[in-house]
Picture 1 (cartoon, rainbow, N blue to C red):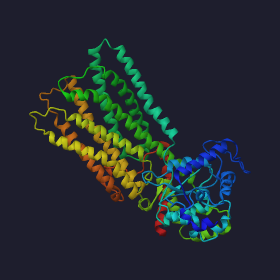
Picture 2: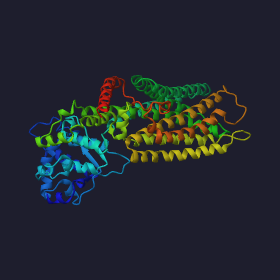
Picture 3: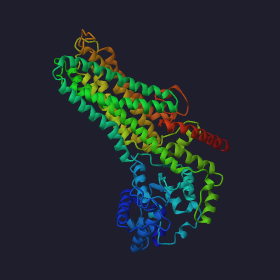
Picture 4: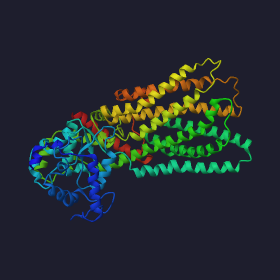
Amino acid sequence: MDRHLLVPPDRWCITRSEFFAFIEEVRLLWKLDKIPDGDRPNPSHSDPNHGPNLYQVNEHYVKPVTCAAGGMSYALMKHAEGLPCQVFLSHAWAEGLFELGDLVSRGWPRLQGLVNVYCCLLANPQNLNIEVLLNVPPEESPFAKAMKRATHVLVIPNDTVSIYTRLWCVYEAYLGTRWAKTVMMPMRPRPSVQCAAVMQTLLLPWSLGVLVGSALTAVLIHFRQTQKLVIILAMFVNVTLTALCFITSCMAKLGSASRRAWVKFAIVRTVHIGLTFTSAALACMWLSFPSPTGNSWESFLHYFIPVAVTLFNLLRVAQINQQQLESRELRRQAGNLHIQTLEDATCSHPLDEERIRLAISGREAEVDMAIRVLMEAGSYNECLRRRYEAGLSVKGLGNTDLVVKTFLVVILWALSIVDSIGFSQNSFVNCELHPFWLDVSIVFLITAAVTFPIVIWVLVRNGGPHRGAFASIICSRAASAALGLPLLIEIDCHLLRSIDLIMVDSPCPTQVSWWMVTGFRPLMAAMSALWSVLGLLFCFERSASQLFACSHCEEPESSDSEASSDASEATSLSQRAASFRSSG
């Protein structure tokens, strides 16, 4: 106890890597049956994804290990001087340790440089009389002091019990609102679920397309001239359908939530998956033809067309998959937080319950508001609360899994740069079009592609996860449009010229292609950067500017059945928000 009196509670922390090493140590003992089930049987004790609950881990591992080391907490056993608290875990002991580890891994705030974590199981001296530490007003408790130092609170739901049936967790939610903390919960899908989606919707159709295309190329080898005409027409149809599919996805944003979800997941994704198959098949047959000679731009397009169309469809499927999986994960985690009323929350010690209820007396509506925003957005901070109070949806805006999204954005802009560089191979002799402006646009795009990840990172660090999530969606949509629309125009013109449906008297590029590459792409890059930084400042007002964000101020799409169930929830939540505003 002496060491815990010398080291302040806001330093009773371990590092993130030590936390996961601790879980692996417990897993090894659990496999050897050295951590038995408790007197109250835990039905998930033998489940490798759930494991023993924290009561059993404490009794059979934490207490023996720390007792042998001198009786201090596990955290101070690792670091005698302690570590400053950065991430505070709000969780329940009834959950399985392996489930806890998985959720911490998937919910950890990325791009923040955060390392140290406060977990009460490891922070408090479990062999000593903890009541001495807790026999103080709640705001003087070790939990409160640690949370006050932390920048982020990571809420860990579980499928055993809602953590907000525990009064201490309710009090932690209260402190999060009082001290304006960034409160988060896991929204990142399980890696196994993501891999399954990649296999089924990306690798499988692409592989089948390559196999079918290779087989058809071998079968039709003796019908080269007829085959070329058919392949060009098929590629033209494929490219046009890809463009229409993307435009349909954007136009669907203007409809209702249920209609958007149905169009995006039942139609758009299915068509993009089919186009991935046909693009891969056509690519194999297309590349069997020799490239045109005498024009470097035509030669570039010959090889770039099948690659770009296939990649564009793959990236669109990946984007839609990620959005759907995140929406499902948010609903699952929010369901595990559900509680009818804060009055249902309990505490194992009557004195603690009395003190906590006195501390939050008169602020119950605000705590309830914070929990509802957390369940809707996946995160809570003052900006999200104000947005929710303004009657705007916050669904999914707290998502912190921005690494995949940022990577996809960079790929899209990189493909745009490659296409623009290829476009510069056009002949500009005796043309009114000056290549200087094309070179300027290419330099601008390269700068934008390098800058966008930095902008997202800065927004997350300085503004919170909702700023980064908003910016990633805006950049992704702008990048898709900047790559897709100019490229599809170029490809269709090239294909029509290949079968002499367009007669060209000059080697110069068309005015439309020139403007789309030289003007439209840099314009989209500049507007997306500006809207990423300033967009949320104006999104409290309904305006035409939301059209550029594809109605992002409304909730991200979920599946059709999910969207219908959201309607009744939205009514209840809006009523709660109105009640809170009137009471405030």
